[in-house]
Length: 211
Image (cartoon, rainbow, N blue to C red):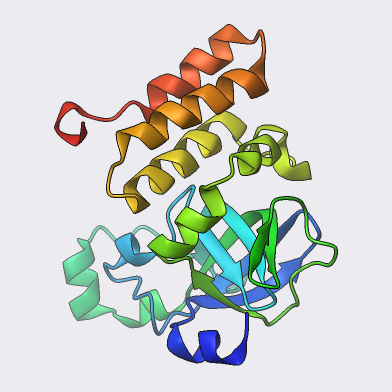
């Protein structure tokens, strides 16, 4: 990701740990207020891009204490009451996102395989734009990597695949033809695993008002 792209976009956080198969991102608290802006966090299945051009799909978002000495405790107060009476509580929380690598940008093109090098620690990380999501997901090769678990243990593969397809569908202004093509790609990738195929297809089926 070149300097001009970094300057044009707003980073959501930075890489704190990295491998060929995945990377962890600490979300900057100043941009994502824990007092009520959780909907601004990267969603499960969303696409993120590290500054060194590695592309990931978010498979986990965790919120917890910054250290072992300031663990959250039940206070018996509503979120609004806590904001008024003890707003410092939220400043002690740390949000970490984990993303599975599905490819990388090289010479302006998307490479749909694991990157040759991990994302660099302290790389800035950006939420992919709709245009970038469309480029990344035009080729369904990204589904193969996710279905294989991206080399990361503990990833809910089928749920992640379905969530990523839904986000790609939304980035295309709910283009139903894309869902049809995604379903065909899944059928080829899953072969005779009919139950698994039908389970994923059920998860990407749009609500009636989206068709």
